[in-house]
Image 1 (cartoon, rainbow, N blue to C red):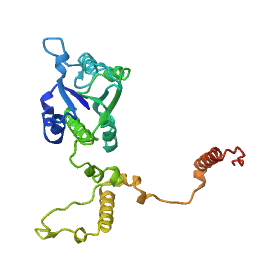
Image 2: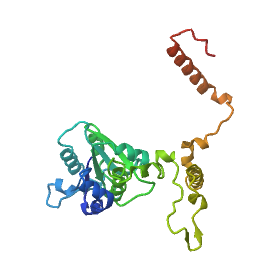
Image 3: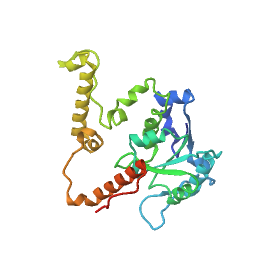
Image 4: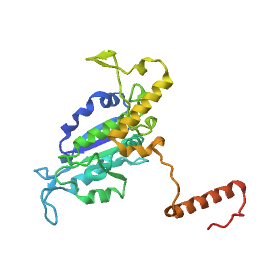
Length: 275
């Protein structure tokens, strides 16, 4: 995967050289480059911002340097083309599913805004030549997109095949498919007793089915207490209830779909009337 990051503070991205992301770069799994937006300015002050039209507080990042930066980094044109990621608190929320989808991309360009944000025409124009995602990492505001880019890149890169030494660990962590989107169960290691606190006895039993059941129960409990919004994804939390008159329209749609499926399978068009 190729990753380009554009910022007016490129040194902010230096932690990407460390740990697993750094190893992925060294191994050639990821080709990552950080660029200074000011390299695409042409005045002696290397200006990247100006006052907003319509008034208001703060400054807005100018479209010219961003346009030139994106044009340059999108070359040579390949298929599939690059995907532009614009970090903004008004973007859609970043999560594990989105990280997994982005991990399958071949080329990502991260635009790290500052001040009040980037001139809206940059995204508008970029959408005409490439895929664009405006993304937020949470319901809060940062001084710039660099910290968000660090978070996203680490979450994405670790999902690329070959980056983690033990890929099985991806299936048992919080939010993963292997966990059905639940939070992870509690983890323990040696010693068996620490400051009077003991490791749960079930983990010493050697009965893998019982251990799996205990871990599942713990994951459900933790998720219910801390992130109940995740529970509808889990089969255990499905609620079966009697249909009401309010469900009539949806039931009719399901009934019609079932009849059409049956007709396609059996080659019959002799369908009973739907009422």
